Image (cartoon, rainbow, N blue to C red; front, side, top):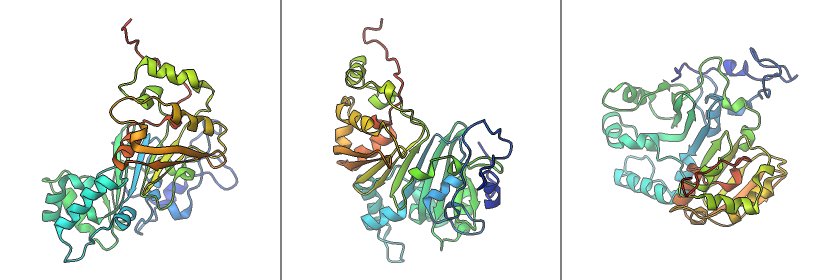
Length: 339
């Protein structure tokens, strides 16, 4: 697991391509795609509270395979959080989180929820104090970035981290109002500088799932799928002719969901068509989470989806049950006869 020194914008900028197209330090010109410069508005400024969930990508290592961003502020506004005033009852806050679980589009229950009582009683902090949250996975393990409200005394968070009775760990970036774990070390490349990634993130989304790979056929079909299910898909669609997919996102804003696979995709409508003929396997299927046909725009690379059931929709995204994001290679499946 990586250590957590403070991230200084100047360090991040050393990773980026200059405006005249220069290569990055210690990287051969032909070793891969050039990094891009992260807009100043999405860089984490030293000694200044972070504001936008997308800023987390300027801290997340470039080799992250999956990222979830949850903007609790947006969700609280839509679902009606009781607030943090002195007359706000804890029972009302608990009721809000139950409603958020049923009706919200959060891709995580919140890192602080697991120890809500202890953190509240011993350190006077709770998930209600978290403005936005990023969770990510890399080949080295999982990590997170939590942004706390600007008027919160970050000494409380530090005390909770240092308390051996809690499971909360990480590094406190007090001026930035962040608690971080597993973020990029000094000199490491960050995900925000990978070409095309920031174009897939939607401002003001309640939550976003970002994946830096396509979805294998077995994963997209689900654990209960059979060879017959795969054959049924291939009989209607030759997925080998799809263009490679290296990164995609799914953003939730209330009942509206937008998937992004990159602008100018000639295969976008072919990928959208897969949804209509994808077999129903397992206890939760596409029609449980979404309704109607997806609407695709090949010029922008966007796919519009409409939610039927929030819990099912989130489950489908997190489990990779996404036909439009399937890889263009067929994974062999075990023969049902066992031969």
